[in-house]
Length: 120
Image (cartoon, rainbow, N blue to C red; front, side):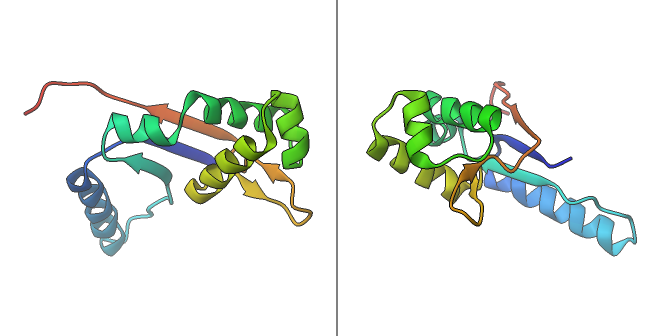
């Protein structure tokens, strides 16, 4: 199953994750690849993954590969706005294009995880 994790982590936390995986691999442990998209903080995440873009992901996941024109019609949105949002989702790796140019969500599951806690 292709699963993508989305969340917030500091650069320090991301570096620690990479170091931990590196050390485990060097020790001969089997390190499973992990697909993740992390943002430095919640405002950055929410600016990139807006409610409108999340609705696009849901629609694409539900209908499967579709043209941008058909997606814009389904969402009842302006084509140029859907095109702009699709470009951003493509750049983040949340959607892909197949060989016929149709957009789709390549992930079986997208898991979002956010934590709010007091500063240390």
